[in-house]
Length: 226
Image (cartoon, rainbow, N blue to C red; front, side):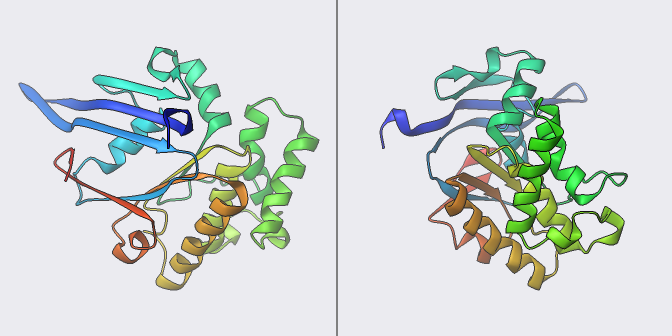
C-alpha cells in the first residue's frame, strides 16, 4: 500500500516518566503505520509498553519525543481541545473494563459521544439504537449497567466506541475481564464489526489464541518491537 492508504503514522515514539533522580523509559523509539483495513494485535508481557503505545496512538497521551500524523495532519501540533474533538470523530476505544456511567441507561451511554460531538438527541438515539440492535441488545436499551452481565456491558462499551463511525478502533485487553465463553463472543463481534464498518482494528492482548486470529501480530519487549 502507498502512503495515501495510511490512516495513522507514528514515527520514533519515545515515552518516559520521572522515577527518583532519573527516568523510567516505557517506549524507546517505536514507529508504526496503521493503514485502511488493517487488523493487527500487539503482544508483549506486562510493562512492555503496549498500553502506553495505544494511548499515544489514540492521542490519550503525548510522547516525550516523536511524531504522530493522521492522514497528513500533525496530531501533536493540536491543543487538547482540538485533540478531544478529533478523537471523538475519528477514533474509538474499548478497554478491559467497560467504563460505562452507572447513572445512565445502556442507550444513554452509547449516545454520549454523539451528544458530546454536538449531534441532536434524535440523531444520537437513532445511531445508538441501531448499534444496540446490531449487537442483539435492543431489549436491554433501558437497563442500567448494574442490571447487565459482563458480556452485555462490554458489548455496550463497544457500541459506544463505534457510534460515531470512527476510522480506527483501539482495544486494550477487551476480553481480559470476561470468561472464555463471553470472551469468544466479543472476539467474534470485533471481526464482524471490522468488516461491516470497514474499520482499522488495533488490539492489545495477552490472549495468544485471540492474537492468532489476526493477519498481523506485532510483539513488544522493553519498549521496542522484537
